[in-house]
Amino acid sequence: MSTYAIGDIQGCYSELLQLLKLIKFNPNEDVLWSCGDLVNRGPNSLDVLRFFKDLKDRAIVVLGNHDMHLLALAYGNTTRLKAQDTLHDILDAPDADELIQWLRHRPFLHHDANMGLTMIHAGIPPQWDLLQAREHALELEKTLRGAKCQEYLNHLYGDKPKIWSDSLSGWDRMRFITNCFTRLRYCNAKGKLAMKNKWQPSLDVNNNDKEKPWFLWPQRANRDLTIIFGHWATLGFYIGTGIYALDSACVWGGALTALRLEDKQVFSLPCSAQCNPKDY
Image 1 (cartoon, one colour):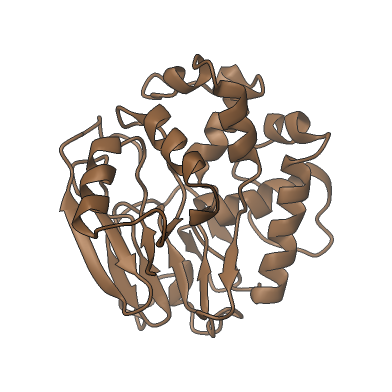
Image 2 (cartoon, one colour):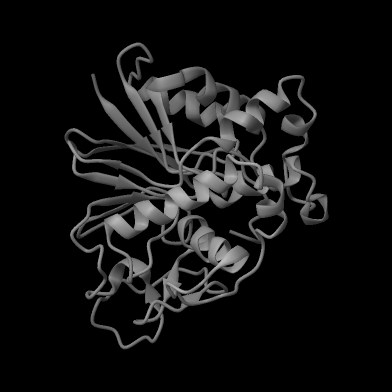
């Protein structure tokens, strides 16, 4: 049995199947981890969502920002629909309700103590250690799966608050936690989120930038973890100290990448499905 982690797919179903063929993925024996963003911008989001749902306990999927966007649309927040979204096939599908309920019950963070690995979609702010990150992920999951799901998704969008405080409450608290797990790229040394900064980072830990990738701050409380994440197409595939970044910009004409977790072997396949790369 092998376990594979795969980067952002975003509806690139053909490339997913080709990559699984390349790694000789056996759904009866192997396990597939997804860093999130199963859907949107690519041509076959419905097929990707059905594929992972059908894998049942052979798949572990954490929620990404595009997955959350789909949930928000499904629960009535249609004012946030974008021209470049490719989610209508899911919303109009005969099994839409079943797919949405399955997606709604995915986690924001997965930690495997035996493998010593933690998977998220985007980032963990430097203030949080593993215990705090897991507690805050559970807060979101309880809300997303509960009676206040629609209200939560109606308050999903926005870049504030920008810095964590234990005193944060209500939808501000939920939005900050959501932004960390699904959107975070840059922050400053105190953990103030820089949500507008999306571009290719300097990976020099000694640079004097006031805003750095969240994983480059040496004092971060989660530096003892080995973290797998996606989300950052302009960063691309990257291996750093305790870091595996797997979003290799498939839907933007880059590649789809898988990492075999037992031996850290990397597999990559060029993507043929390109969207309009205006917004990562």
